[in-house]
Image (cartoon, rainbow, N blue to C red; front, side, top):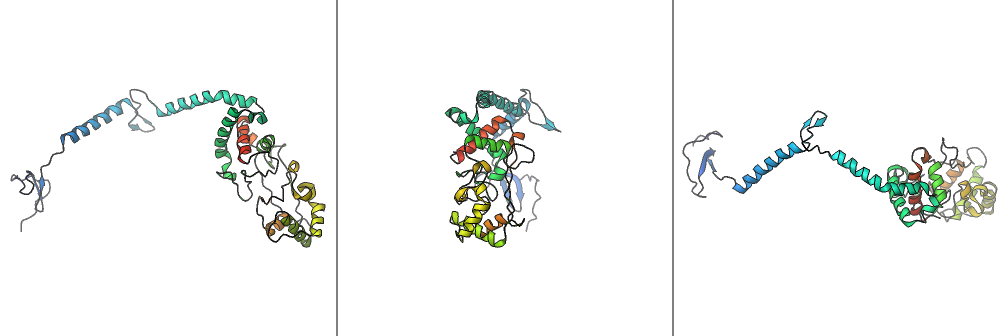
Length: 298
């Protein structure tokens, strides 16, 4: 048995392989001889051309990193500068529309189809950045966060009312013009006893067909004495006071009978910040146009 030759040594006994007819390089490992098959010339020239191109590219364009910077290249090209120039061009092109929105009352924007399309597109972008955290990417909301796709508006659904709600928020702690209402703690503060809460909860549930709801004279009387002022006759809501419509089967938190009882016992109150403290008036108008269009508006 022959001793295997170490890789890398080139013995002088090169010969032609009897099976392939190709000469060997003289390298042999464990009896396996390496054929002398050079790379195709076209492949080698392509490889050399790629090397030449890479070296040339690195001379003319930013390439080699050094600390916090890279070699600038002879052409002085910068992708960041190119992007900034592109954004400046876009801003310049949009400036006329933005100026027009700034000068136009929000209710009149809808009367201009081109302006309304621009405001809707811009509002959709602003919504993704500022509103999806609470209302969701599709504006469908969730428990405690209104669904903006339906046509139920607690504070009114006209474009001006939507604008006011966005600008001044709901129960904002810093905006004196914020939308504000508070539902009494009928149970926690002893305004109604348990029996009365059960009766009025059953009446409220019956207005929209909630399972377990029951309209009784006692429940209707308690509702008339305690709830009509904010929710209106028959529970259809009072938008001026932010009193929700109780007949449309749309619930901010939960529409079960037990949830209605809990809300009467000790209601939960959400809040939305006054966006006029963070966004300029043009963006708020764009948001109002976009949100108004989601649910069909009023």
